[in-house]
Length: 160
Ligand SMILES: C[S@@+](CC[C@H](N)C(=O)[O-])C[C@H]1O[C@@H](n2cnc3c(N)ncnc32)[C@H](O)[C@@H]1O
Image (cartoon, rainbow, N blue to C red; front, side, top):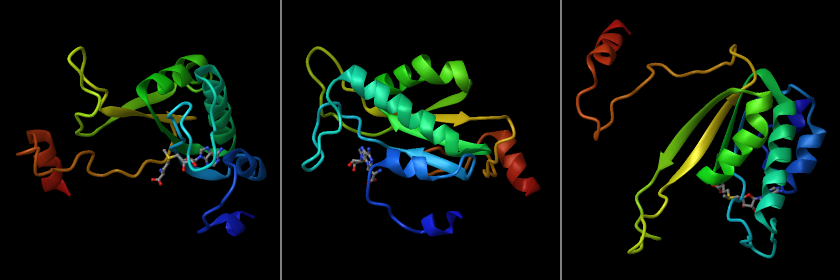
């Protein structure tokens, strides 16, 4: 049933595509919708004002959760404020298994004499159940900037 969707890029409105998919059919969803409220992408302006955007974002998340398997994982990336609204106005009441990750990037655009800029995005990781499939081993990897890994990770590495 899902074969016709596999390995294709679908050009269209995501809300239409989500309606076509069967419930509980998708293992992982990563949402990176436009979040610059009021900003145009090409000739399209998807959003008008903040409240309207949040309602759309909540509906997008609802439709996504409908097609997500009980063992699946949903990730929604957005500005921290938009994700805070999504979390408080919708997710906490229905899907409280939530982790909020920060994608941090270097920028000084937006700094001023009065304030720093926001230099991260929020990624909400939402699970329907505690039986979600998650493939991450070891739980943390050594990167050049991290230096020597902590003792428990060194021990874990020796065991694998
Ligand atoms: C922040 S960008 C994501 C960029 C993408 N992650 C990438 O790396 O290329 C948001 C994108 O979502 C698209 N978009 C916004 N609303 C949409 C909708 N209702 N259906 C499908 N795409 C939409 C925009 O056109 C834009 O390309």
